[in-house]
Image (tube, rainbow, N blue to C red; front, side, top):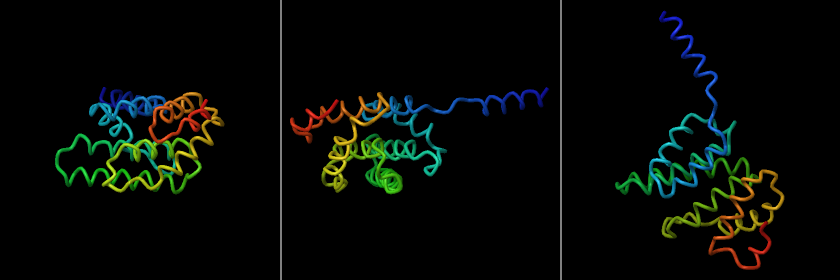
Length: 164
């Protein structure tokens, strides 16, 4: 009896569907306003391998940084932010031509206070994204990036005209 229950549990774990990119994106978009979504995203991404799943690792880095919004202890805020920043930057360093990772960094850098000093890649990421967004085959990603850029105060009218 115990063996059967254990076997069923192992089968359930082995066949459990991994978190889809669509689910990750959805949780990410809600995370900046909803602590529960941010916590859920972090929980679901806690065991990912950045080398095998760089995009998921990028989302994990961003969610880690966003948790600083929901922490009241200043030391924990900075610690969470720097931990997430380091993860995102390491993943981007190894995958610098990945538009989704560059989009993630752009969304964070355009929203953190300037005194944090995490804003050096805003202009280069913006230019990269504007140049790449029309070439994306993933329609959901293309829409997500174009929508964000369209609403960004850092994107000029002329640049917005280049968006799909």
